[in-house]
Length: 201
Image (cartoon, rainbow, N blue to C red; front, side, top):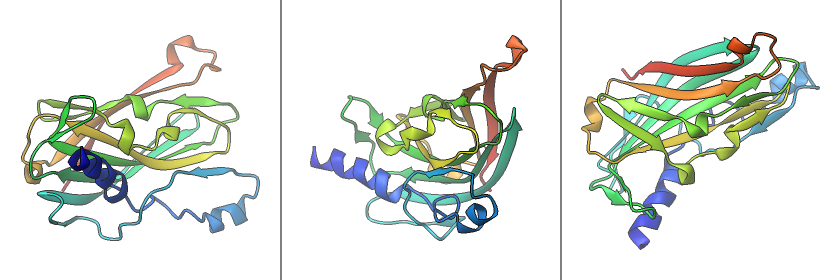
């Protein structure tokens, strides 16, 4: 039990990430005082594209990414991905095992004039032929749900894979999640299914 709790705490604390932006947001707030910002707590890691081997993990590396997309005024960015591989697969409290953990750093801004719902905390990732699920204990769960006009949310969604993969060989991954804008007139366009590919070079 101590080993499991230690691993979970390690993912929450170590797993992330340089808050994908300045949590002070002083310059943006000065330019736009009416703009609200909600920033989830993340720990600061200054190095990117570096492999960090410690006694806690067999492999850990932070990758810089540059993905962003706008949909109905909802701007979503992913600027960092961290991969952590424990020395041995860890037994989780729900009975599953974690052989690989992946953290994805999101920044989501609602630039529209209406509420938009996003669900990155209900998505998954795909690496090769393996699909990972969200690890809620290691994620910023307030990234999921309604984002009001003018609000920016930043945080990490953590995913776990139960099957062992050579972490150092991973060059890309797919991230999948959904967003909903129920106020649009075209009912065929009120849901956005994100299925993106991130290169980890």
